[in-house]
Image 1 (spheres, rainbow, N blue to C red):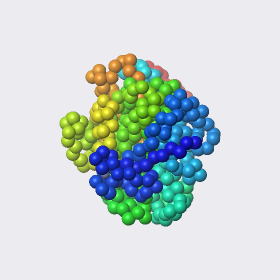
Image 2 (cartoon, rainbow, N blue to C red; image 1 turned 90 degrees about the horizontal axis):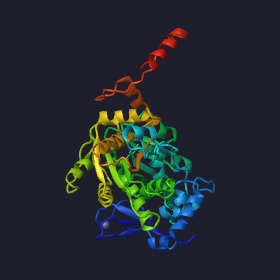
Image 3 (cartoon, rainbow, N blue to C red; image 1 turned 90 degrees about the vertical axis):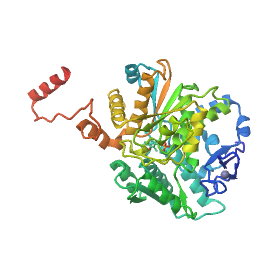
Image 4 (cartoon, rainbow, N blue to C red; image 1 turned 180 degrees about the vertical axis):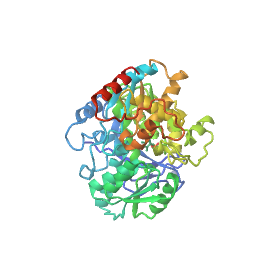
Length: 446
Ligand SMILES: *Cc1c(COP(=O)(O)O)cnc(C)c1O
Ligand SMILES: [Zn+2]
């Protein structure tokens, strides 16, 4: 394998300071900007596009460890500097690209697809980035500098902590997770507890947890696992590469992704850029970032043409994983959306819940964040921003089973601010064949 290189680089072009990927650095110490992972594109370009395609297709979902992983099958593009023996992989990626045929026909856009990123080890796309980050932590701990770390920490709206806890447990590394108390689902709380993470439930919202974890990780004894750490973005960008691969290296017209801290929309844009830079695609899709109306700082900034950005205190939303008012990756997201003809749209509680319920009726089982993306999709179709012939991919970010309170609440009519139009409650009956027959007939007659 040729000697591919990658490094951290300050995103402020006027500064552009660089650091090694095993440095404990999360923002530029000179100017305070975020860091990006940059790759030696010249070296990568030396391999023709057709050969990258063959390499990626040969590895895809095969058993040759770790290259059967959707992330590590693209290792040269993701994190070439981590040694194979340090990789902590739970076989992430390779998720179904679901043809939402019935839903697409209902809406009048039959070429509709849902990328099921939640069909993953811990049930969310966070696994794609976490495998890269925890692998690098293992390399740092085992490396020649032999750094001793007390553990790896993150603030989380639920899914990041579940993922960090699982990957750390698999590697035998201590995990410390900060959750906003009472604001994550029961499943999301159970996950880090089961994996043995020190689970700190703070009387704060996500943004408050984020402030604490940033301070805790400053001294260098504890490694920061939030998506501010751009190693995660490198893993997540394989979503874009994998979707194009699943379409036999064809690029879709639109990709719609729910956004909270705004790392994922930046990552997906980066994946499409890399496909273009290395000649595997001749164009990029347009991106739409979908926000909950109760946590919509990027949507509001978009209304000003991204000239202004004002952090907000996010209000409570069913889409709890994107209840973020001060997104860490906002500058990257604005850059990414500007470069990709991007738009930002929002969905109310009612809209996200109905969108998820409608999609569920066509065979999906959507988490509320996927509901936000679907509701935004419906709006864009209605206003003809998306054409009936467009190929559209909705990024489903988590598994619906992590959000059973949301599902049960909807069908029980118990969600605040939502009057459900597609309720389906259990019919409780004595064990009597006649009564059962009546119930079946009533349903058949609508
Ligand atoms: C983390 C997460 C998001 C938001 O991703 P960002 O990178 O923070 O914008 C959306 N949906 C789910 C289910 C998540 O876990
Ligand atoms: Zn800088």
